Length: 180
Image (cartoon, rainbow, N blue to C red; front, side):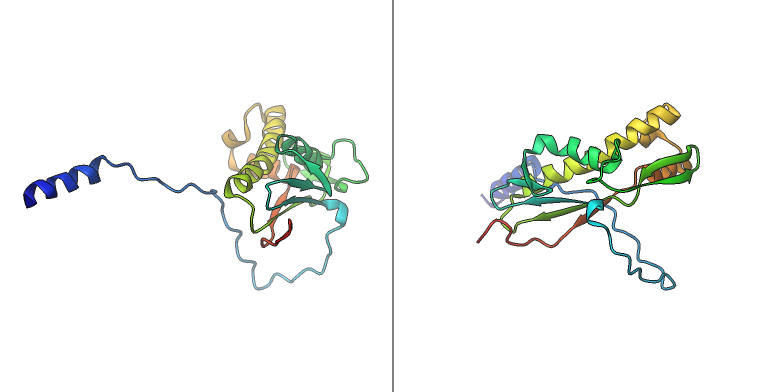
């Protein structure tokens, strides 16, 4: 009887599928050099794209309610600022390898803050849209300049494209945005 129970136990252990937790694949930033001085430069408000998610999984983007399917296009517009709008990030002329002298956005930052009651699924969907916006812009400029998608470029070409569309995703500690 014990042998049969043991065989059944082994059978169920082998045939049972285990759920694997999914998450975000992120690389943590490198620690700054000790020689690197702390900068007292303040980021201008126009260079920050604020995305808030409340406990009801509702988005507030730049103080306006927004649906998740609109977020990617809005983030792309913010990062690229194609019309040099006054309410979007500042632009500057830079000399970039492979591109020459280009007029690009200066330090665009996407600030993401969620409520403690935000669902994990919604948080991941917002993250995916923001990352996809940056990826699509980089793919577009890569295809235009090099004829290949960003992921297929050589390392130095990738660095040039990253300089063309720089963006930082800043994630703040969750708060009670949507109430109790």
